[in-house]
Length: 257
Length: 243
Image 1 (cartoon, one colour):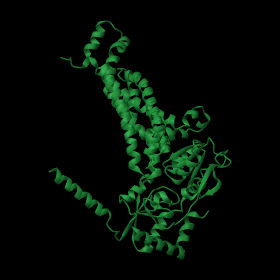
Image 2 (cartoon, one colour):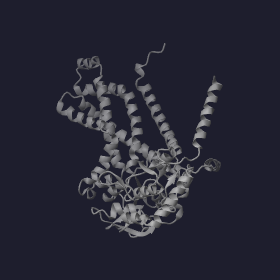
Image 3 (cartoon, chains in turn blue, orange):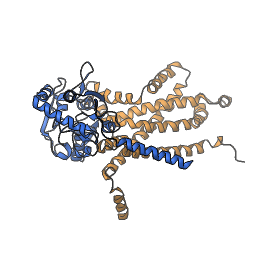
Image 4 (cartoon, one colour):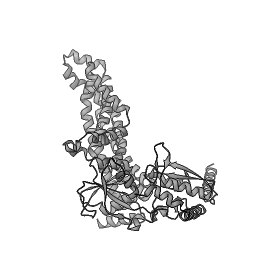
């Protein structure tokens, strides 16, 4: 009886292994995992519709390839596990390409490379963002982002680091003076802090894109590792959109100052 | 000592997630969690005793406000209470300039306030139940001795109510430990905060959360053991007589 049970279990295990190594299928519909809000890359407009650079570009890419696009909202913490557990087929959510993530997913060519930047209130006493300049200040970052990793490693010994689930929580704590300086993706910081008339913030120091081991090569669409054909389709479509001007149109819509 | 360090280094050599830095995060997370839970339980307990006595009072103007307090704090999620206290206080204009801000600036104190008010509400109800369940005979006997209400409360009702409340209170302590896991939403690096940080950094949900679950289990075990010891000591008179 026991042996029979073991056999069944082994059989089930083999079947499961087989099904996960099955060859990539052709997609009629690609479901994208996306974490909102992350203005202006992905967020909900006044009507509650998903919009943003990633959404527009993703839809344009799908149209170019001739497949359907669906968007599935997923929290950032679980966005890679969600891809692996097939809740969706790709991630297009301002995900920076880097080596850590490459071990888990297959990236398309980078479709945009936004820098990170330091944001302070305009009346802040912070003068520079060197290690000495930020000593004993509180740095706000979004939990689990590259900015979090960079700030933790570079400033973790001299400054306090507050980690927030969303940029909105971070802004609220900057406004209430619990955090002194924010380290964010530049487009995100610009949209939430600079372009917002309620707040008075400025960028301090240079745009940060180095070192590459933290900031990677820009944002890419992440696929499951076996979906190489699908990634190739998106790379080709991206090339086409760059050439025919559609890409620039979408870019200007969200990033012109 | 050197041998111990060598053994530890060798143990950690083959994995990328559990290195000295991340174990340090778990360590300080454990300290934060224990501090937060312990402090809120102690303060909550001190608050709960007079509240429970007031709650069992026959005078409506005493018992009704306390009922409202326990109703609100037991009737809303702790997460919401934490958000309201942490983010809510900054909407009072000019609070940054008052002495209160020294305490409220740090996330620890708002979290401590939320946890304390929450656990005090539950503990009040636990004690009230125990006070209400005092056998009539004991009260009548105390009256027959001519004890005043105050003396009867101190000598008869409260001691036996504490004993009766002990098992239920032990549960509340464990619930509080587990409820403290939400502290990380207001940037506190407690145990769960450390686990979420390591999860996000290494994309390793199972390793990060299984490890932290094991730590919670150990702490829970210590609490269970403590309460079993207390029950054995204080409820000894209720045990069946050994043959």
